[in-house]
Length: 150
Image 1 (cartoon, rainbow, N blue to C red):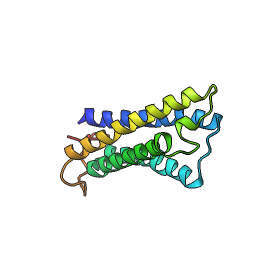
Image 2 (cartoon, rainbow, N blue to C red):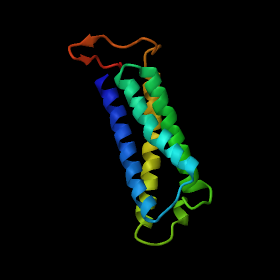
Image 3 (cartoon, rainbow, N blue to C red):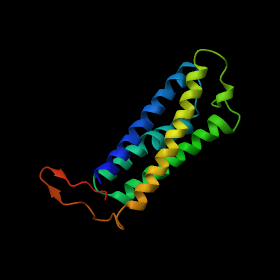
Image 4 (spheres, helix red, strand yellow):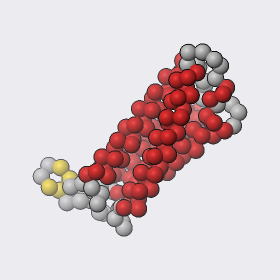
């Protein structure tokens, strides 16, 4: 149970770090995002995994695992489409030669890899979660709650 929560936390930390690292060349090149893309990045890529961790740490295993899986899968699909799929200014091949081209490409691949792992971690946690997350908060032991995942 401690291991599962640690894996989820590490996955989200790596996901956020990789996306922050990718944001540096994004801003330096610059590669602009439409307003809806910025909203997606903020809500789905950045905020949703943190909310998922909050659910997991509070013992709401199914809700946390489900949100983690969905947010990571959505982040992966978004990144694959815009970085490697559709021709657009955010595509890795659209970035002109220069000092930021390699970091942009490298971090785009890193983000995709971590998002794929994150989606799998979310699915694994959902599979391993208790049958119901409604009112399944663990009993308190001392000042900290008992860890929620089996």
